[in-house]
Structures are given as C-alpha cells and as structure tokens.
Image (spheres, rainbow, N blue to C red):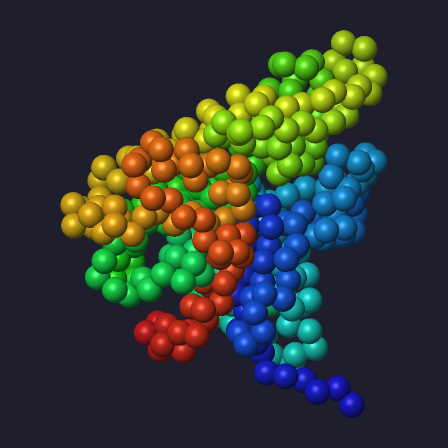
Length: 335
C-alpha cells in the first residue's frame, strides 16, 4: 500500500539555464537544464531537462528543443507551464496534496511578468505560490544574516540576468538587474569565433569553451581547447584550437558591463551602507560568477574585496529553501 505524504514545501530557482528545486528537510533534490523538446505538429512535450538539452541544435524539423525562459523571464508561457508541471510532479512524487511553492524572480521584473510566473506555477500544480527576489535568496543561501541593520552587497550572475543588490534589514535598499549574464557570454563567444576563425559554432560548444578555458583576467599560463564547427567559406566541418587569451578578448566586454553596473549601484548606495560593504566585501553567487577571473576583475575595478560564495550555483535555491521556513509567517501576513 502506498503512503501518500502531505504536500511538501518546494523552493524553485527558475533559472534561464537551470532549474534547481529544494524541498524542506531534504535539501536540493533536482537540478536540470531549463530546456523542453516539443513536437511542433502535435504540441506534445517529448523531453524535459537533461534529455532535452542533449537535443539542442540536433533535432529534425518537427521537433523543437527550446529554452522557455529568456533573460530571466518567461518567453513561452505554455512550454514553461509544462516544464514546471513536470518538475513539480517529479519532486512532489505521489503526494495527495499540491505543494506550496516559493519561486525566485529577478529583482526588476514587472507586475505582468510576476503574474506570469504565479499563473504558470499554479497551473502546473502548486497550491500556493510565493515569490522572492533573486539577490535576497542568494544572500540567504550564501549564509548572510540579511535581517541585521548593516549593508551587504550581492552580485548574482545567472544564465539570463545579473542581479545586483545592496541588502539591509531584510530588504533591497538599492538594486539593479541587467540582461547580461551566462547566455550573453556564450553569444559573445559565438560572435568572436565567427569573426576570428571564420567558423560557426553552436551555443553548447560556446558554453564548453566558457567553462573550460573562459577568462576575463590575464592567466599566468595560456590554456587551449580544440573545437569543431562549420567553416563559413567551405560549409564543411572544421577543427580549430582556441586559447584562453582569445576567450579574454571575447568576454571582457560583457564582463565590464557587469562591473559598470556594480559601480553604478555603489554610487547610489547610502554612505553608511557603502562603508559596511567596503569592510565586508562583495559576495558573488550564481553559475556565471565562476568565469575565471571575474572576481579579480571586479575587485581591481572597485577596490573592494570580492568573495565567491560556497556552492555559488545552488545559492539562490538554498536561500529559497531557507526562506520556506518562514512560509507560515508570510502566509499569515497575506491573509
């Protein structure tokens, strides 16, 4: 006989590149790429997550492998709903009750975009949906006590957006969200390889380059990686060797956009909080902050110590999970 549990509280980091789910009392239980493969004729979902990611750029005409979230917001509502439904049911298992769900959103989303996330999660089977801003969740996940009356600066670089916020007394004092993050780094790599080597590569190859040899600060030793792409002159497959010094050329422009955004948030920060940040340093979270040398570049340009949080990729999901502990309080406040 099956044992049906009560609906669990689930925290979801609904990322442009990855969906991470956290269940109260269990920790991170799911980490999958936010990719969905759909049959364009029947509109049927064929694969979700890791399986669908393998299909990116490799599908026949009737199958479309897409990422339904772009730059931190829902770009395809129907597909996002189907993806959420799949992940929620996978996490919730055979529970009789629908789960209460807390979802992360970028700090500068509109009311319409917020409503789209709530509606998609409700349609996907969540009993009640709560939203939390990404930098606040990232700060909680990084182990910062955000309730204290002192300033903390968090730079959360995800797949679609970079969220920068100065947090004090549990809320954002000054924040910004820019659509320059992991995906934008990949785009710049594709453009650079096309211009420099005259070959066309896909986003997966660009991502591999970024992870393996990508850097934004001079390395002591130049590293290399062999890649294959389509020669733009002959149209045939071609292999080239790419160096980390070339990756620095490709990535320095988007990296400087993030540095400039941090600079502008610091300029608007009240002096007392700016002094706190100068003492404590800047915390970096999210998968995008793992690009080699990004912390050194930010430290050099701001003159403030920069730290990468432990388990930077899961920080937002862990923070969402910890925020789940206060769901009953939030629920009562709403009522």
